[in-house]
Image (cartoon, rainbow, N blue to C red):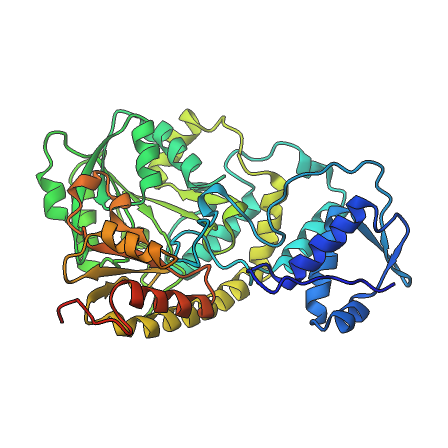
Length: 479
């Protein structure tokens, strides 16, 4: 059997997804019937003039969804499906969440959200998942340890110690479905009659969680070294007893907090018994200048740092596995106040991640992604050299986005509108402020690059040069 697959010459849909969608459509509409034999991946690749890995990815997705089946020594056949229900599905091969859905109508979207999933080790993840389920381990379908499975917590402890300098035992770690859940759990442990200081600008989702839990939130301004501890100390009414910080790579400013400022923060926490620092180790895996800076938690000798992290950026957002590292003094409070809550991550998913970590796949994946993001980072920074006369460029030493501050005083709204007219989506910094009307960086926009190809970045930067006055038009910006 030969398959004629009309590839779309326009758009960004990968070829393997077009093959998958076409075959699935033919099966659902009756063009391919139960028992029909499909060409081998090699034959189909030769026929379509594509790589064999492209056809293999398409077949693997069809296999996983049950549309086709592989018969040893015979090949691939259309499965017998009694009842087909038409459903609207996201594109194959990508984890799509509401937060990461791209903007419609833009040629290039410099979204600071999401990651590059084209390099996700789907085959490895699928193989681990299959092996776990093939073992017919019924215990995986029962309730497990509320803190998370001990082997996984031990694997996380080992990774955090070697990669981030975190000092803890597995008993101090709580596994949960994402940072939002863990922050809500933390509010039960600490009590809700708290005042929390937050860097401003900050990660707004964390702010929404704290405000929703009834915390009084105090916005503390930042300088080039991070949260201003002197301003934190001046807060008296109300006086904060918690501080939420991102010292390894502040989101969204991209600041890496130096050791002296970290020591000042710890000194503030040590002044009173009930004070704690919540360290969100955001984007710590991706750093492009100098050596990785160890976590603040590793400097703490007084049990004052609550460490929170997630695998959303380093693996995939849909994994939804995060972890909380409590100081030893809060472990018993957790067990008393919240230890009866069941784990929000299935034992199957925990087992998959455990094997992904302990078999070396995670380290290899991180190394590969560091190389990919470094290449994208360098491409973008090369394109932005033409912008240096008109913009201050910051946040480029770590993470997956950079900030452009217009020297001529154009507002972020004007920069966004001019970019949008050229078909490019950029993001104003004001959305990250607790009180956006008090944004002192009103001329700053964010360019994320994780989800873009190098070609898309070049196209986007070219369009921005024209939209903001570069290229053939006279440069209106002062040098």
